[in-house]
Length: 74
Image (spheres, rainbow, N blue to C red):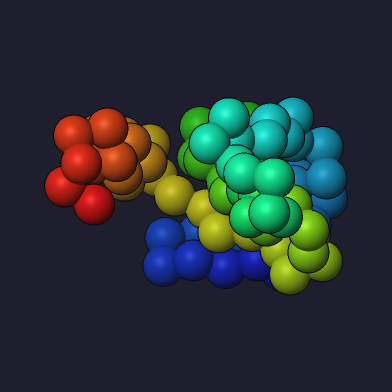
């Protein structure tokens, strides 16, 4: 199981997710992938070590993160 503070997501659910590599990922192996899960939660994982699992976030948490990245406050 992969766990965060709000819920548990099964490995199977993550395997079925449609993962997308970040356009901000560089060529130095610093890559991350993002997926929107059927539950509406967002998942993020390390491209080069997928076996570590993923972190999941509620939609409001994800939106706050994206806004902070875009406005430079993070």
